[in-house]
Image 1 (cartoon, rainbow, N blue to C red):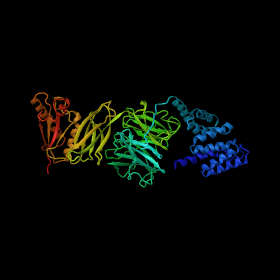
Image 2: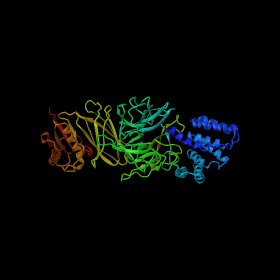
Image 3: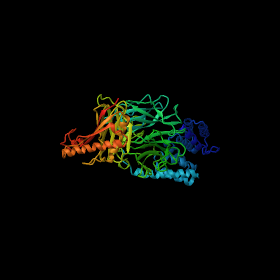
Image 4: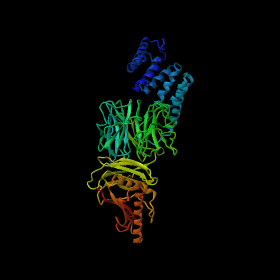
Amino acid sequence: MKRLAHLVILLLAFQVGASQTKYSSNSRNAIKSYEKARSLLDLNEFEQAGSELIAAIKQDGEFIEAHLLLADVYRVTFNYLKAKENYKQAFKINPNFAPERYYYFAESELKTGDYEQALNHYKLYKSQGNPSIERIVLADKYIKDCEFAIEALKNPVPFKPENLGPNVNTAEQEYLATITTDENTLIFTRQINRNEDFYRSYKNGDSWTKATYLSNNINTPSYNEGAQCLSPDGQFLFFTGCNRPDGLGRCDIYVSQKEGEGWSKPVNLGFPINTKGWESQPSLSADGKTLYFVSDRRGGFGSYDIWKSDIDEEGKWAMPVNLGPNINTPYDEQSPFIHPDNQTLYFSSNGWVGLGNKDLFISRLDTAGNWGLPKNLGYPINTYGEESGLTINASGTKAYFSSDNFNGYGGFDIYSFPLPENIRPVAVNYVKGVVFDAETKVRLGALVDISDLQDEKTLHISYSDRIDGTFLTTLSTGKEYSINVSKDGYLFYSENFSIEKNQIGKPIIIEVPLQKIAIGKKVVLKNIFFDSNKFDLKPASKTELQKLIEFLKENPKTEIEISGHTDDIGNDQSNLILSQNRSKAVYNYLISNGINSKRLTYKGYGESTPMADNNTEEGRANNRRTEFTITSIGK
């Protein structure tokens, strides 16, 4: 519909000379074909009108009006190469015949990469075409595009696109690729007979498996599904659905949750994300708390703007906020991609200075929370064509995109390329794990809570897949983290780990065996911390202690013993006293936070019950621990 409206508006250009009765041609047959073409254009019959104009030019090659009108037909049907050639022929016959048409001549040159000539003709139009103020503003914008493009072509950036191969790409159209953080799963849109559906492929060594239909729960035969994003853990698919029965407007954003190899029925995100207008192209932040998307709702800067909305603890989306004038322009901004670093945004725009159509840009968030002015990704990543739909991997080294410019398998194909250093995001790593029953090995859906050990800030809360028990989340490098996994009827699991600054592409892999609540079962509290030879709880212990309090409140009849343990370094008696004092510190903390003392006991075991060899530092570190053991589960 948008394309048709665009053509109807541009048909106004054909009215130039509508009342003209004298033409540059004296050929009756040529004039007859020309006037027939104009009548056909009133009916939007572009192809037939073009044929009549070609006939008119064959009858009189010097018929300027026919050349100009044929150029207009090609231009509004997006055949800019032929449009450019016919404008050129018209102005070769008489360069002063219709100077206002230099604007369209320049447009056709700009959109075919003929920047030097486009620059000249935009300037010529401004000096001779009697432009309106609005057209002067547009011409000035395109002049800047031409000047930028001329310099960009002189300074190309590294760009080596690689087709993802025949298991992903076909003779059909493949585009809008999204990828999980571990780069093992690719979901993309494939268009067959004008119907858009999602397909999925898995990484297999250096190649991809044969793409398969994603899900009957998501794909439909009657509606188009597209413009999607995956949550970084691959558990949620946000996508665009248009004209669906449960829609609020023309296009809405939906979400579906992964269930093993399948997907749940999608849910419309509802108001305030969706409105009566057009919402599309979602991109979710790594922590799952912010959704970026495109909308034409009121309050924006242009036709299509990029907006964001935050989700609260109750799962409700806040009223969307426009990203502001450092991102959005009076033109169109689309296809946002927020990198897992949560501070680098890639998007497409025809408003910022570029190479003539929609280009790809990067903007970085500063320490004050403001987006920096966008930077064009450069040529040949950007060309005179339309570039959009960029996805970047977690390490920031590789980009995925779609194009029909590289003689692939047919139409649009999906490609990857190494991202140049200067337009890379901040590299992040990820933790990946699986939750299972410690005895039966059955995979479990459980709550996964990951926090920053230093500032106690919760970074990630989600559930492992209830079918296969897997979870995954991205994390910044150079930090220490705690992880807590819990499920009703089970003891919780805790662990801590660090990701070094140079630890890129080497994820943390964790197996999480959960024990059912039973007398005698114990949990090592790996995120309880003391200074050496001291028993004062360090602040970083608070998150773990709160988890223990929650567990005791959720299981009100459960009683536990808190035990302290040391390595074998030092005096036996001193170690026994130290372990006793440490277990008592935890005991006192629990009582001060509302846990009945009758449910608690504490004891120090010193070095008497090691769980590892004391001959290594790693073993001694494991022996220095605080545990709790179930002593009663009540009735």
